[in-house]
Length: 224
Image (tube, rainbow, N blue to C red; front, side, top):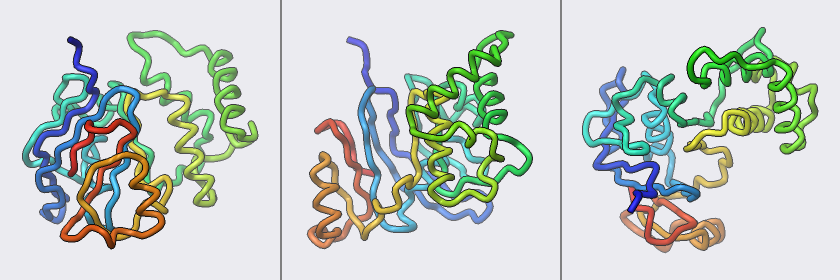
């Protein structure tokens, strides 16, 4: 039987490289194709660290454990190789890139994902970008703006979603796209009903806990 899991994290430990500060201490998580998971917890519990370790951020170092992405050891790949393999990270705080239009940025990124010497047709790309922006109900003029330059917080997040729609990754890691997910603290797995309970009551019903992993598929997600 084919393994439907696209991501398997086993006993992952990681630290902030420059500060030699341990953040992740034995994270375990499995994600199958078509599943949506939410990792929830207080500030400092390691949510953003996990996202950046998966994406290959150079400021973070995995010190133990392993991460398998479609059966491949993700930790052996550089950040650009992970991106081309199908990993996408929507940043919590996207950086500004003055002088580079969103259209050119996305065309360059998509070109880098093509195999071999295949050249991206500029007209096909333009049509595809227009279609994606229409799907997201975005004005086409948004594509001519410089990447995140002078954007509001909402515009920055929408731009991250547009990048995801264009690149169509196998696994999208979204770092607090909706900051309302942060409440108090928890360590438990479950379905979407837990998110509703947390929104209503916070984490007061659980004690001695740090992080929760939510999934729309019961029995799949393992707590971190």
